[in-house]
Image 1 (tube, one colour):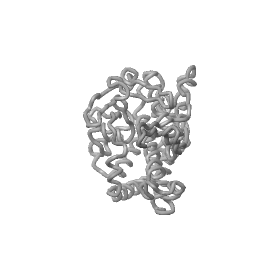
Image 2 (cartoon, rainbow, N blue to C red; image 1 turned 120 degrees about the horizontal axis):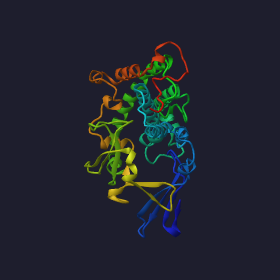
Image 3 (spheres, rainbow, N blue to C red; image 1 turned 90 degrees about the vertical axis):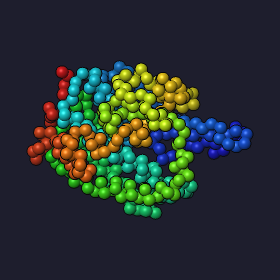
Image 4 (tube, rainbow, N blue to C red; image 1 turned 135 degrees about the horizontal axis):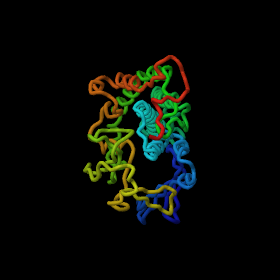
Length: 359
């Protein structure tokens, strides 16, 4: 929506994102973009309405931050509560949490790639907006749309089988998890791995086959210099659950490593802008805006030294790293099953294997 009087272009709302936002482009006298602003238009207030609440409510409350990635917020809050209680959760609970988190990665990334990104990749960046969605993908290449739906369903069903429901589960609690993995749910999860793996592999091959047609976008899209922040294992390997914070710059140089997430207030600042409800965090030694950083899949790839199936869940022996991802995943779930899950019962009682109280 151009505004000639003020030399601005407003895009409102921004679609195919997980949230509510608009974009304002400010043009110079020659009609070129002088400034671009991304406005988050929704006020959340989580920090305020958490004040005075019991700490035990925090994980379930934090899950409500997002309906797409509630598991991530649930897990982060539960881990903070673990530290508050000074407990070390049992190994079984640790493994179950990691599986839960990886299920979140599967369903969220499937949503991002198939629902939000594939319309541009398949239909083109300038496609009719009314068709540039998952229904347009379904019309042109139905097998891709079906794969996206099935892969996301796989991740969501794991979340439901472990956490009781797909949206805002409260299964991860301070000290561990609230219920064990039953044999029935373990076997159901295992049975879905071959199809999910096949979808991931053929989608990757399809994506690789079309990248040549997007050389211009690859060279220019999002290439501005920023820092990248993510967690890594002690050996620098990829991890999704636990590790030290590493920060690298746009040249790939490590500028901070092994930072304790618990000490984030010592090195992460927040900038409030008058034109958005979004807070802009930054690495304090670099100041604002030079200390702005990116997180997410690209950042995880940039900060890690190596990636392998062993990096995903550090509960394998070395011999378990050699097989295919499907075989590895099966062994993970076999290791993760608590004693209550080894029988054919579907008990709902809390297992000591998966929960620890204060010690």
